[in-house]
Length: 263
Image 1 (cartoon, helix red, strand yellow):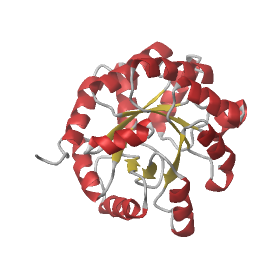
Image 2 (cartoon, one colour):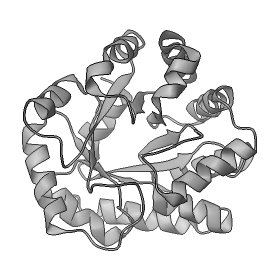
Image 3 (tube, helix red, strand yellow):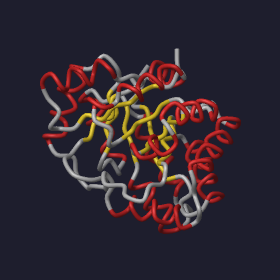
């Protein structure tokens, strides 16, 4: 059983996945923010690899990518950061990357480097299902979960094929558009979670717009196995160097814990 599978199988409540961009605002502060997130209650750490053209991301995370690149963050440093965290923590580590990261390094080498660093799962946000076979094969060879995105527009045979090939968890984009914190969950989001969870053989993690503790219970009740919080965390890191990060992470984790069945 992989670290990701074990985390979901033992949680008994929504799994809390927290995201940050590696190297934002610089290597040392980013590493410290990751430690803060894990110490305060994040179950799975999702690390974004900085990229010059992060099209799936909104302004908050785009600016984080820019800050990281301006401070010299590289693929080698991302793997070094993951390896450092792996030595200190047992929590799963997931990389969120763009396809150019794979092509620039070479797909087999990229996955070997990730495995060597202790990475448990990789999501390539802009790699279409039809072009993902080589990456999926490399992931399987290295014992890394291959995580796929599902959007509100993913339906029919394509949805079934994605569900069949994914491992670890399904990353469900809750809304159309780019990443960014949102105030309210729409009824359409909850219906989307219900339908996706019924169709999936592995846990469904809901991302894009999740930013408040009160978002969590309705998503869990609808069938979500995890919530993914990105922009709200990246915003705190960018705004006050992460000083308010422990309080925010603790509040979100407490909301996850409150969903556990009462004994």
